[in-house]
Length: 321
Image (tube, rainbow, N blue to C red; front, side, top):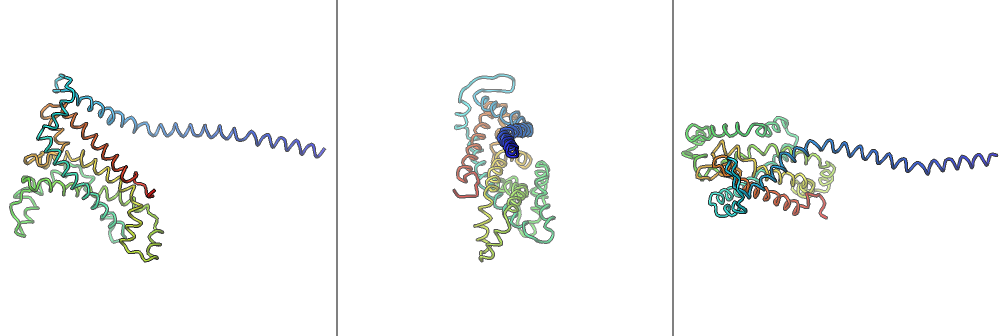
């Protein structure tokens, strides 16, 4: 009798064990569906925003690039004439050259200055919190306010910068009126404005690096440069890639406010970036189709640049595989 009872119990236990995995799989699928639905709900606002304010306007701009639109409802299909016009437009070519110069100078400068500041404020020095806040503070100021402030400081005769330079014998520099200095002036102001934001991003990446790696390197006798090149820089690659791409996009598409307030694209179109030239064509001259074509080219260049950076940096991966 005892043996039979044990056998029954064994059989019952075995049946229960065999039936458990399907229930667990069903529960796992149900949980996965709930998590997937929750993820969709979280992604929905951003996805709608990208669809309504980025993707759809991008498609409309590409389509309008093949039309002549004068702002009065007259829409005429002209094929690739807007794109052919770009190649033969001296003002467009000059604006493209100014944009390339601005990009080549500003992007590496912001990158290097922000990284150096992040390495500096990472140290334990007195008043480090106040220093970080002071460096980040310009970024929270409106670009319109920044432009008006620097326009006042750089005025030819009454500006504080020229008054300060006069004390050391430097006179007659028109920072915003001389084509030789204007673009460089805008670059310096842009560095001052943007460096705090990217400093914070670099700082967050630096703080994610395990301190044990530096301790082991110090024990092995590594110098500060060796620690940076062998530990900091490889571990910082994903952050560096993000900064490089975002600062490039910000430089190309975000310089309008500053240029509009400081120089209005002058003097002699020396600061007429492509984003400002697009504004001129659309809202000053009513060439909406031509402006849309230029904007489409600009977007394609940015996409190509982002893909190129992902390619050469392997997506910012830490490993070298």
